[in-house]
Image (cartoon, rainbow, N blue to C red):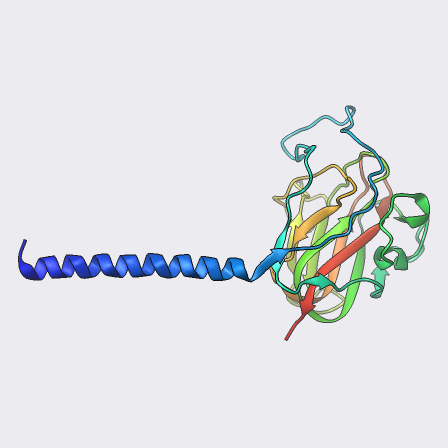
Length: 231
């Protein structure tokens, strides 16, 4: 090997080493900007997994272990409590829109909004654009069940016509008409379903559902949006 070739080879190695070190520093810096998201959980209403709902490839296998901590950007906090909620169902069967963000996520009929059958949605107005870390939804965790066509979207306007983004969609057969989802159906429990907000910036959060394995009605106990006001 000539002296020039040796020097070039050594230089290339130094560049690769520097790039690798920079990547490690970037990952370390990103990790320093994250912290476990604090979520206050309700009391478990039941234990175990139902045996009368057969599992298939579209259903997430239940776990008997606690959900791992969710790492979100530092400073993320609950930003949806007491915020205005609108519903697709103008005459709910039980409860009112305020139950969705009233801060009470304990199981029980008095805490549950019930909307009519078929596709329905509940929409939260954060009253200003927010950087969203996570959305956590408790449909009804008083009995083992799987809610159908669970879709979580965010947008800039209340009519969801501008910059609509989908954070979660487990509608595997497009029965809701909003596109085929790749997420899994899941069993409701006291932990709720945590949806990664991916740092999306939006003012409105809309959650769809279309009944469950327990009832054709659409039920919501609580929805939490965690994040920070957008700069």
